[in-house]
Amino acid sequence: MNLLARLLINAFALWIVDYLVPGMSFATWQALLVAAVVLGVVNTFIKPILQIIALPITIVTFGIGALLINVLLLWMVSAVVPGFTIDSFMTALIASLLLSLVSWFLHSLAKE
Image 1: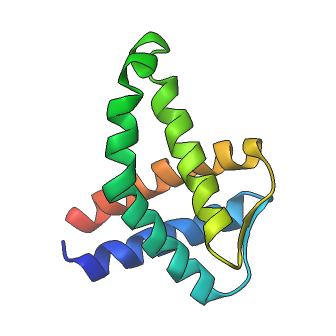
Image 2: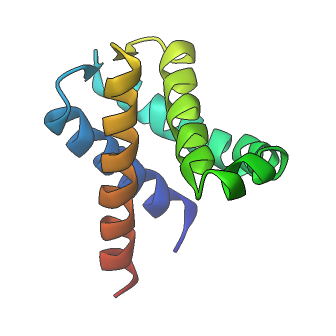
């Protein structure tokens, strides 16, 4: 799957999660696209490094460490991208879980 298709799928997944989670919002569609790009870059370069560093905690907590990394990275992206806001940690937690599920579903549909 090419890069543009992945970007559009991730942006669509973010839009769906924005619609479903009340404390998460995008000011414009440009902010949505920028957030999708920044989240893709963060997940490609920063997330693997953090997962290796937090591996012992993730093993001890049976995967909750990996979930917390996802939540914190999503929250960090909302702090960096203007026009993208997440109100609280719980909102980021719910949004991260939903984003993982929706993104997985959309990517599995695109492969077929």
